[in-house]
Image 1: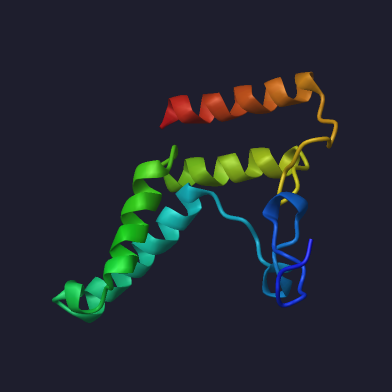
Image 2: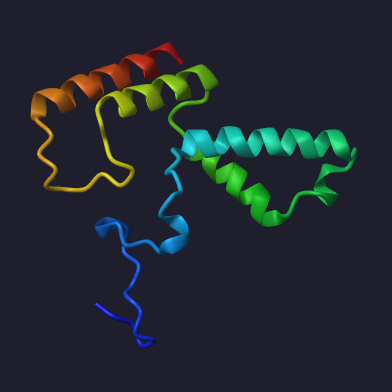
Length: 118
């Protein structure tokens, strides 16, 4: 499908997301929250008045990532990433890949175990 400019439309479901994202990695909200929290802490160390250094968009992004994250502990976040990597999920997992129900059940069980330890 082409847009008015003649370029192909970006579509994450079909992994058509634009040239600049081809080498980018997807992050879980928990990973984004950890990154933003670290940056926020760095900004607080630089200036005693962190609100001068942090934009409203940054604050809202941090708030969203923190609230929507299922995992808060950095160790748990790493374990979740390891589980997902071991199961050979692609960056943009989509329908039709043929993952077996048993493999999915094991993966979900592993993720649930990590969640219980939080």
